[in-house]
Length: 300
Image (tube, rainbow, N blue to C red; front, side, top):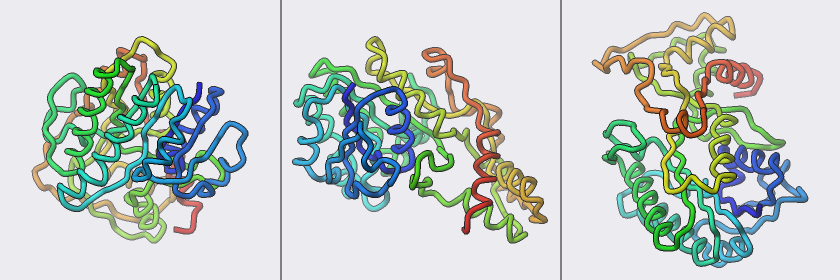
């Protein structure tokens, strides 16, 4: 299958690219810097189109003769409501429209659990965006579904949670968030770390996340559905920090601030859709320990 991928040189995107290559697909990657990931440069089944999400000509060129489009790129984060709409929602909608016009028959959009906002985290439930970021993700989801309906094409949405992992290819990037990196840095220095009691999430290893993309790409029956991709286990940031302390033999102390955050139980984020559809029940603890060990070897 010929697949056009945005964000393929980023953290999640690099895992998506590796997964698709492992399954024999031929890829076209939209990238501002085609040389960013050395492990992808010169690959016989990767073609680069130089450009960003604001480059309509590059996108049109990349979409030629493609069977599917996987949108992973995040163009904008922060700023005003108008800035988020113009720099994130509009480019995503323009991509979906261009893909449909180019005859692409399958689209997978990388959204986020943030799209739920303050609503219950349930794929079949309602959403209630509470930030501009969650609003732009929710809006892009809605536009994709309407375009898919209008053009009668297959479209699905993946909503990842906090995704982590080691670089999966030579020169591959880490995730941009620094929380885990800072934990390891503090543990190595023996510094105390302070966290809000019960603050955490259901982490997911990037290698597990991309299995959802493969299943969707290979299916002709799954259409216009939403899939929240997180592990089944809730872990607090304090618990992850304690993992780092234990693994490094650190003397760091973990301090909790009680701000009245309720105990979310084992699974505050519903994962029934990926369990019922694909049989996935991801667990992240062992991957997290491996990742913390990896971080401990770096010059942070």
